[in-house]
Length: 376
Image 1 (cartoon, rainbow, N blue to C red):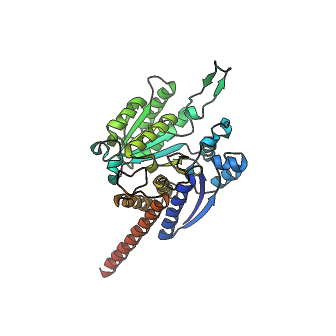
Image 2: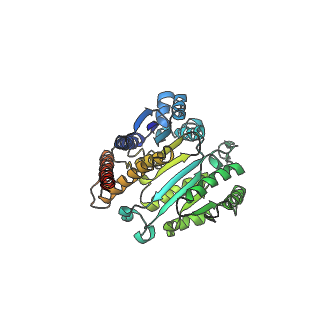
Image 3: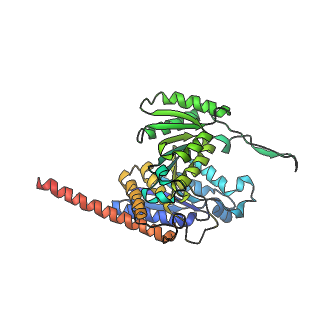
């Protein structure tokens, strides 16, 4: 199969982790007989430096003509003084909208080898496997009007939270469908005791839920969900929520499982899927070669699964990451006292090696199975 991929390395540690993720994809494609066609474009601060536009037209065109998009990270303190429409983050928001990617999927899985990396006790975090389904194109981040008005000392800021029934219904269906392939539980998170948007959200989600009799639906407020996520993380299956709540809860989930550096994400539902690690650009460690590339690498597993439906290939990437962690390899954010620390490149190299080992083992098993069939 031909895999047409546009990469957007972006800012900070984005280029470093994207490079390692692409290396893993290349190993998977070589092992499974696929062809990887790569195009790289600028976004965010890198695009601002090159063209004074956080999302240049050629970047949009390259993304829309690809089968999938792999993003590194955007942002940095050098751009904090820029007006809102020229901030690096505006490029990310715009590309999501251009692609029509309304559903953000963020898994938070506690690898058995990393039980001691969580700030929570092992008995609390063990077995945690959460999928946060976040609505990505509505709510406060996109609502109008928005403004800061008035003179110094008496200014007033305004943001608008807005959701339509159709927006809520389509993201709810994504969550329920995904729950059917997991543990058949959806927890819808809102603030229906205060916000009109949340009241409509709860009403629409409840209505859609009646069509999924095999999925258990429950509702909770966002503050209660945040507390329960720390107290009983393993009880969660699929969390369905709106844009800002999902943004916050997914970062909290990253802390629960050990590090934001482990978290991958997929933004799907539109023309082309967008895949990226959850961590930011981390400008304080950019260029030092110490960033954790596993979030970006696990994003390629989601890319293979959701954009190309290559389930065996996706599982191979995930198994390779698990194998590397089981072997005790750690980047700085995951290492405990006394553990050796790998560079970004070293961690990527170990995952590539694990992909090759797993593929070779699969091929040996296939040969053995074929011989058994012939013998009988």
